[in-house]
Length: 415
View 1 (cartoon, rainbow, N blue to C red):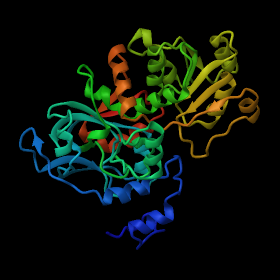
View 2 (cartoon, rainbow, N blue to C red):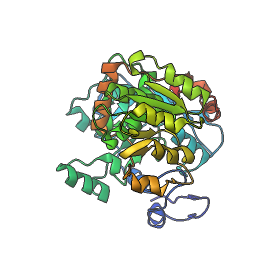
View 3 (cartoon, one colour):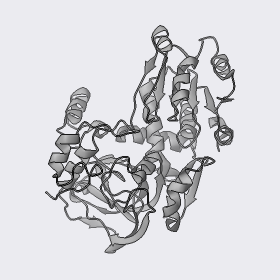
View 4 (cartoon, rainbow, N blue to C red):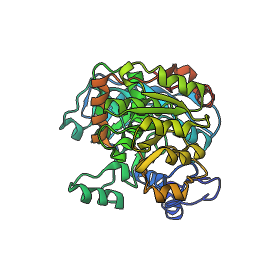
């Protein structure tokens, strides 16, 4: 096994990956709940690459890719080899790929990802080659697909073992696998012309969904959809969405499509405007409230009607104050699903939490089954994201564009 150098800013120089793993397995990275990135690298380093069995035409040997060479420095646009892929993998020609907060954290070095690395875990594109086992399923060259962040569940860790037992299945839920690989974090992502996809975590896209619209659904959409499912909201119950940005705009539309009255909450002019500008009128929120108003909580409770508050709150921001405030607008036995990852951690009022018997539910991201269900809703209801597309040549500017406080919607590379 090759030696890793300067893994945690010099803490592990000269150690093997196995030694790094033992030392840091349960280390929590700042701004995230992830504890398994090192497991991913151990698993990835041992992956066996097998030749493809079916492909569209002769593939090029090299491709364009954006590469992070040093943390917090501009991405370099390079020509690198087209990746090899495995028996149960697909090779995708990337059509579009999104940039989100996790990509920004990788860029700054929060996760101490192995360098160089190709960013983005929100890729969509077209299948150009199919591995031998994948070809035994329904995968064919030419299919338009979207990729979840994760691939290659190990099947044997405690997360995999528990999920198989809980579901009564021999197939694990990759979301809780402790050794999964993560696109753009522990292995190369979607800011390239070609990318390897795991057939087990890939979904076919609706025919009428453009790539630049599909890309944000692979992370932002999957994150929000999972949060809504975890909330287990009563049918037709009123729900609040706090933070109307890349995630919040989708949360509003998903909830409306599922039959919930929705109040959208933000304190930024861009977020308040976006809530009212959603493309499909039927999917716009029933009310929009400025969180900075002194009577904001009172207005939300008033919106909810006779129950004394909303049944659920989907918090699409890492603002600690806003997350704590969300409990004030919940009815008795309501549920809060915080999707942000504040560096300082969460803070909740004990009296709100205990005396109202509230639930705070964690949620990471959708699995393939949930992603397929989400895409059906997107197709049926015409859910649409506000996106800002960038050309490949502009990828080096993405961290700067992302940190613009006036950014509205999602940043998406269109290949």
